Figure 1 (tube, rainbow, N blue to C red):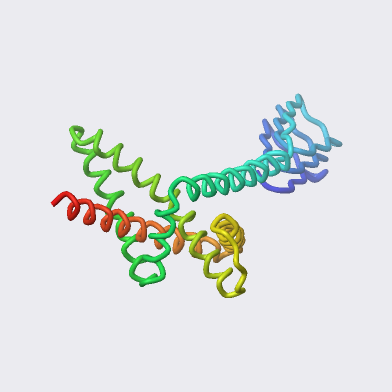
Figure 2 (figure 1 turned 180 degrees about the horizontal axis):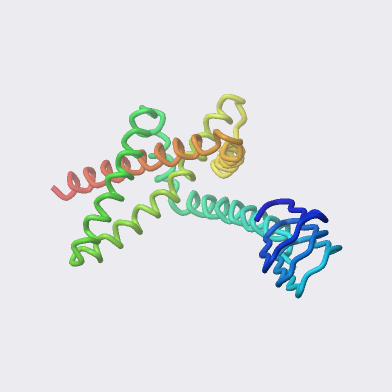
Length: 221
């Protein structure tokens, strides 16, 4: 198996040969069956029998993945715009928390995600706690999805404030979303920006939920 394989004219295989390659050229002699799976196959040699399976190029798969990724980015943008329209207080409150102490928000969010995953695994092992584990994982997934949207809004607001452009919340969110996704696409370090964004947004979301619960208890009292 290999990328490019050539069987030279002075090569003799006593029995069978099984070849898996991107490009294979045979000029040798195979007494048994030559089985080839390759994108390109050139057979100028001899073989008792030849079985060839053509492997299609993965270029189409790569294009499909790129298209799917682009559509998911657009869909995620629409989700953020809808969320900003329906729950503007959540984005505003999260922005205030992130600007207050971003390092603490990031650390709390990162640790909270790890603890939630560990707790979900422990609950699942107990069998009895499987429903709670599933619910915890669902809440964690929703929180992670919201986290980057919240960070996008905060980032966009800071950028428009620096440029002193009086834009609405939707425009600010879109600006931040585009910048954040460009950072995610950076080679080698894009995943670092993604980890920081998810952790910061998740931490801010936890603080907003805590503050909301405290305010509700105070109102009830």
